[in-house]
Length: 143
Length: 67
Image (tube, rainbow over all chains, first blue to last red):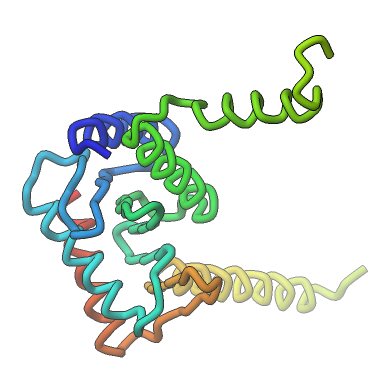
């Protein structure tokens, strides 16, 4: 997966996520080395703090592999979702729908990973449809 | 028909219940938590006061402050 393609895809999915989540304050996608791939904040301190949070979550996972996390404070909430070697950290306002936010974040990460790996949107589905069509026709072109 | 003192008592009781509900809501709104889900499907609510939960909560709080 080329770094530029991934960064572009990550930036795009963050924009989409911001449209889906009106309560989203800031978000960033990080690679497995906790390096920022794309962030909505231009502040470098934000990326460093998000990486520190990911580190703290890893330390708090007691050897288990982290899937997602939800941290609530009086001032806001932070969601973390990991998928396909990428982690998405999002800061939101208080009392957002947790399951919906996590779902949107997971879909965003999958999109970023898929588009970053060179597959266009819906690329894998096109293959599935084609494969299914061929299976139904049992390979005959006149069916 | 209820006796006058009963009406007053019911009113006071109703106000007390409202106040108690307000306090319960306020407590709930102020609750902080750290919830982690693992790839195994297990989920953990880290108890507040433990070093792990405090580290995560502090990092999250700073992130929220940065906006």
